[in-house]
Length: 371
Image (cartoon, rainbow, N blue to C red; front, side, top):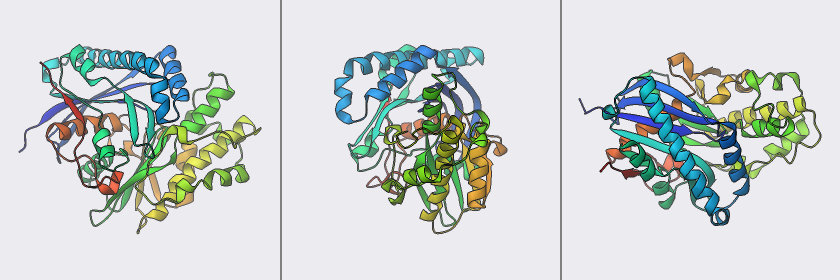
């Protein structure tokens, strides 16, 4: 048996609500064990700082214009990641010496394949110094420098989950975070992955703006269930040429706008935006040579019953959350980045031409070792 490596995976998603922390063990191949998961919430002040900075950064040149703010917030975010790990270790009575490596994704502030940039707030060296642990970070850089989109990076972990749980092929994994991304696993070992469209981002942003931050998200899809779809506005959104592009392809939350919504009621706006998420996921099935037997949903969007029911109705395919496999769908990506850190440490491939568009299968991540 290959040597098992213990890793902590960290993920702070596009919602910017906090840090997912996962402790895992793996050999970087087929063995995987999830040990503990933990959520470290950001306070309101940090959430506002993240959203404000992201609103000011729409293109690569904005990074330089906002360099001071970026440097300052990157340090804050990194310190919070260190605090999250310290709290996690104390809470679970885990000795730091048991941890071989930390996979540090960081907080994305800009992702643009067109401009060949994916910038996360993540100071790997500072995190390593604060914790005295080995750290792997900046997972997307090598992929982009070699012709890829730098995303999605989780498909290889989806394949591991499929094997571990003997899920019948073909199947698709859909992670609904701020953006929705899809991994298709075919009968003949095919793997295809891409960002399908908006996930929760437009819904959350609309509700936060309309309610002056009193409503952060549509819990359970309750607001969407009370409204009606505006088919004209939905069609305008679906006419975006992105949806016709053949994958691999990737998106940033800045690629989406609330511009079409106009003066619809809160309920009708939420329903229309939620339908957009479901339609773009189901329309993506057209890219596959064979319809999947199942659609497996992870991420925060899996808790939105309206989205799940709409995907089920539009696709007529068995649709369920990843939780039925005793995997907490809130922590799939943090577990994945722990796994990717292990693969990076072992110099194993983490991205592929079929998943990110990279020229050749390639490893990634920058390693910072303890002194």
